[in-house]
Image (cartoon, rainbow, N blue to C red; front, side):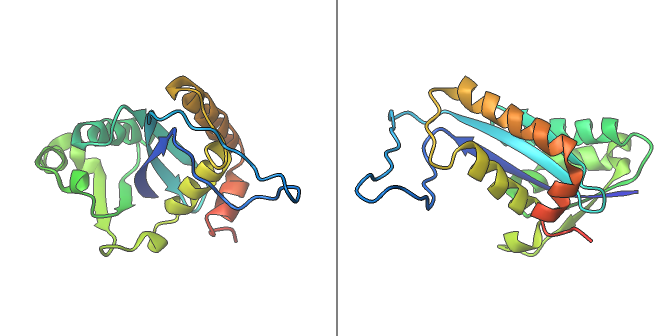
Amino acid sequence: MVLLYVDETHVRAYQALRTTWAEVGNQKQVPSYGHHAHVSIFGAVDVQQGDVVFHRASSANAETFLDFLRLLKKKYADRFIVLVLDNARIHHANMVQAFLQREEGGAFHFIFLPPYSPQLNPIERLWKWLKDEVIANFLHKDQNDIAQSITRFEQYVLQHPDEVLRRIGCAT
C-alpha cells in the first residue's frame, strides 16, 4: 500500500509578489505584459518517503485527473493506492466515479478531506514552495519559459526527498 496526498495547482504567468529586500530608494520592479499563460500540474506526495509524482496538463478537469490516476497506477502497479484529496468537483465527477467502479479503479481508495481545509494537505506546502521558486517576483516571457522553470523545480524535488519531507512538515 502507498498513501499519497494529492492536489492540483496552476502556475500562472502573472506575478506573485512576495516580500523582498531592496536598497532604500530602489523599489524592485516586476514587469508585466497583460496576458496570462498558465501551466496546470497534478501532484502526489508520499509523506513517508518524500517521493513526488508530477503530471502536467493543459487544464485541470475530470479527464486530465483520470490521466493522472492512470499515471499513478502505472508507477505503483503492484500496490494499493490510498489517495487523500480535497473535495474539488473533478474528484467527484461522474467519469471519475465510473473509473473507480471499473476493474482498473479497484487499485484506488479515496479519502476526502473536510471542506475548506488545505492546511490538512501537505502537498499544499509543496505548491507554495513551487510558486516561491518559480513565479514569486519574477516575470516569465511565455508559457514555455514557465514550463522550463517548473521542470527545473521538479527535477530538484525528485532528487531531494529529504528536503521535500522537511518542506512539507513531515520530516522525522
